[in-house]
Length: 263
Image 1 (cartoon, helix red, strand yellow):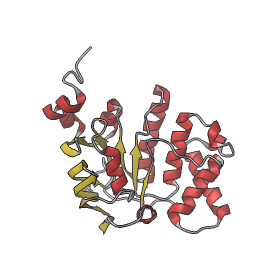
Image 2 (spheres, rainbow, N blue to C red):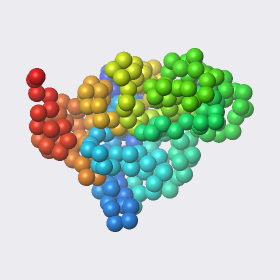
Image 3 (cartoon, one colour):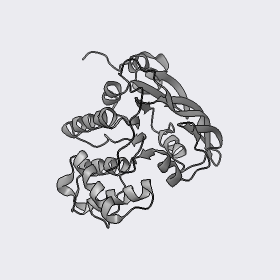
């Protein structure tokens, strides 16, 4: 059964320098007269968990859409593992080793849970036998602790289960880089704790680099090694969580002046 190839230089390892897996350089995006992204630049180190945060409307999901080929940028470049992504179709980008989840879960309503994941195996890896894709789908459902719902209709799943299904579908494409769009949104504390553990396992066990958009700041600050902050479509700060929490501009625009205060 295929597994994502191991990444070198995992964050937290010793004796190996982190290398840039993803480079976003001067990316801009306009919709009509509205500029959503303004010369956005940052890098994602191979083996890291990186957070992308900012107020609603700051361009986070639009940036994900540019990286994954759903929206062409109006300026700038996106390079993944040395390959330029601008101009590639979403399925071509998926096959370079990038997978994503969506802010609003989008399962195929007419398929079972297992067949939703099998479709992702076929999409991300090219033409394969359906029987083999279904067998691998069950492996990924077990990985996200959803094997008990393999033959269930997706309409019967809870929100937390649908979020795990989204993750299983993304993993089934065999990514090197995983983009998570508000995967913790709407989860209760127990579900959130389980999701945090799952994201860490994805990085540590599968050696998949993670870039995540999230509004639950305690999760971002506890999970990510590096944080990029967007404000009005541009990068206003980036660095380790401790530096981001202390940044005056970030506190003013997004965190609030009382963020982290006792009581």
